[in-house]
Amino acid sequence: MGKDTLGLLVGMALAFAGWFGGFGAFLLVAALGALGFAAGRFLEQGGDLRELLATRERTRR
Image 1 (cartoon, rainbow, N blue to C red):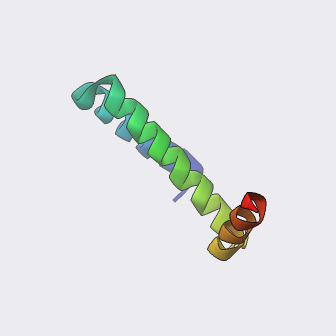
Image 2: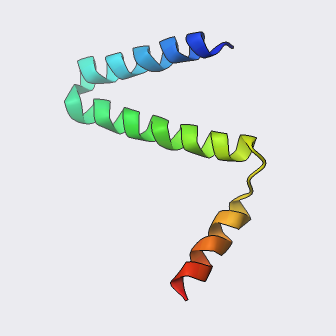
């Protein structure tokens, strides 16, 4: 699937959320989409969930 098609689908999902669920649903869908994008990009670059958890534990101490 190309990036243009993916962008179209995301835009349509946001439009439906905004139309049927209001502005709060629009923001929720946009925030969860951004979180999913960030997680997918991190994993695509070879990241590991254990790296994130280890970094958080080191900064707490």
